Length: 198
Image (cartoon, rainbow, N blue to C red; front, side, top):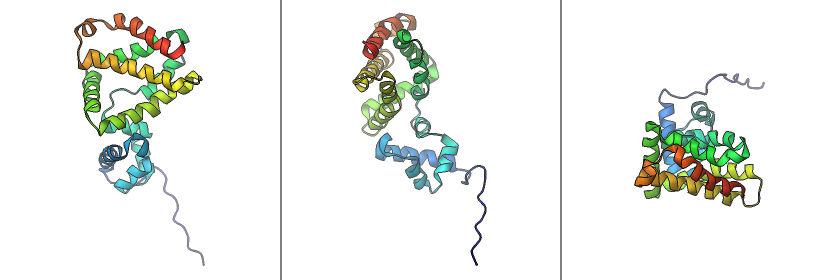
């Protein structure tokens, strides 16, 4: 006589009423200990004692979970691919405009500056943010370029934009804080364009 199997349940995976908060706390710990590359949805789920499907239910992808866990105020991994698919001769300016116009919103600027300051001064946050940007942004840009030195080009773009954000919003160099987005976009955009395509 064979043992009958219980029918599979449909719908949302099971978890307690506080599962989302527990998963988020576990993700912070897991990203902190293993970095972005080392942490997995399965390892985060295992910390909480839930199925990985429940993590996906609440947060979607690992990038989505990371963004929630560390408070990433904007999602370049989601938005930048569309910019890269636009007219090639406008990509540099469109990237710079996307970043600056996002940071001009007070809620993005507040969280973005906090994340930049923390990443610069923290042995815990730096590898997490670097891993996220490397995998979810720089690698995507590099692949889209279809050139041998795509990783270097994408890294230079990231360094240019990071430097601009630090100078304008963290250090607050007077000339950069006084400049309008429209003043900065063509100047910085031209350098980003050169890194990408020249």
